[in-house]
Length: 262
Image 1: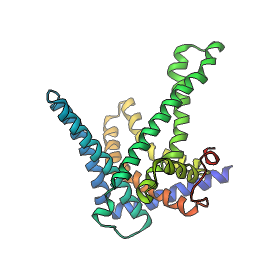
Image 2: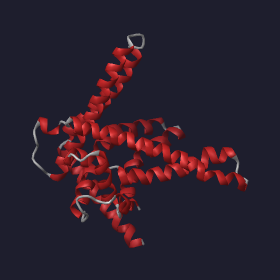
Image 3: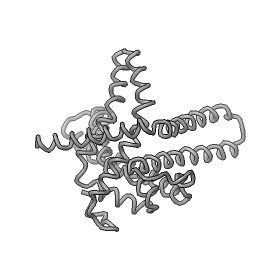
């Protein structure tokens, strides 16, 4: 077991070193897209407040416009990261722009994940209900046990399904097929992916800890690191992992959903 943990730790470190090298050589393009995402998100929030008294039709139009722009930029960032991770030649401006079907499949994938989260959230309440008969207080179950169990299960589901957008943007698969490929590709790689996610989240956890403990200067520094280094790095890291796992993938062209869930 110790050798296995050393192996996945080494692989996770190797991924990060390769991602840092790619990011340093292409920082402007990657960080620029992250900056556009940041501006789009904050501008939409500002306009929602500023245009509060305006026509509902105008607000709906702007909502759809910014939602479309924001998620399209996410797919452009993802496509860019995949191209860099694979070392391919640039496909040109229009090669990065997602098609309408890719955009629609991506949105449907996000909706599907939200529905899964809702089902898991409700199911965990059902599974936690017998704890009340064991003398555990309602508040303990509601605010401690239930959120913890839900978080653990959703983390596992996130790891298994997080690569569905890659198959949409690179291969043009529909939502359901992309989910099946994500499940098939991540089967047997959960611990490796968990290690990578923990490394990615470490600076965010340190930032939260610094805020809680009152170290405001440290928190500000970590916030800058997260904004200008970690967030741009995440897309590259996940793209490298995706490319590596695709090279090692030995499954079929239409993986079975049931065979790859567990």
